[in-house]
View 1 (tube, rainbow, N blue to C red):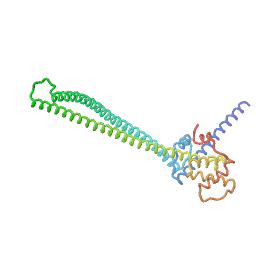
View 2 (view 1 turned 90 degrees about the horizontal axis):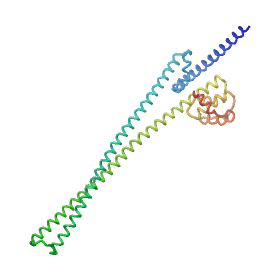
View 3 (view 1 turned 30 degrees about the horizontal axis):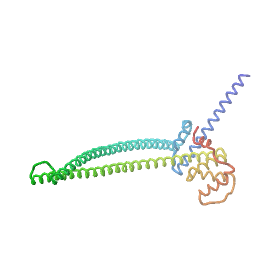
View 4 (view 1 turned 45 degrees about the vertical axis):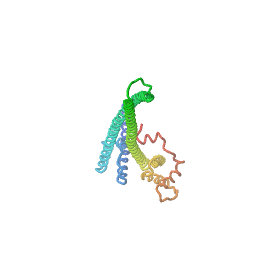
Length: 317
């Protein structure tokens, strides 16, 4: 008697497990066929999440050649997207590295110019101090000679020649100072120009790279949202067609539509929910206005998909 009970219990467990696996295989098969039909209508392949969802059951499914080819093309597209993302990331890193090296060289040139400018300022100050000292000596000696206060016993002609020589020396030093000052002004202007050019060029190129990267990230985000919307709409279709659960189908389709209003499968499921209840909520030539009207009508009755349910539907833990 105990043996018979154990045997019956084991058989029941095997039957339940087999039944669950069969149901899951049928569910996955329906999902693949639904997505394949959607691909034929809209040219949308399976996403990375879709492939992960069906992978454990593929070996146990009997697929048509077209469905098998559809899965292979989806894998190739996912792999291509991965390599493209990896390549673009490496390219951006290389570009940013090159910009950093270029900027460092530019700043090196600016620092070198500044050092030259500082040295020129020091030379100018030394020349200016020397000129002022000589000028004071020249003026004092010339004044003394003109007034006859000097003790030198020289002729008038020699006095005049000496004064001319001293004045000429002063003029020469003044000219040298003017030259140094002009070079200093020119060097300052060059340093400012080089620094501004370096800042502007580096800022423009870096801003261009940042804007390009932001655009790529935005496109990837839009693509991800559309992909998740397609997953939800596919599961909404399955919930209505296979599970006969209009509430869950409405919640999934509503979430898919709100994520991507261009998702035609989501709007189709919303209309099918209305038809399954034999309700009449008016007509509209615009699919978007029609979908909005359906959501307004049924949101109080069926509600909205919770975050936890959405995560589970998208394959999250």
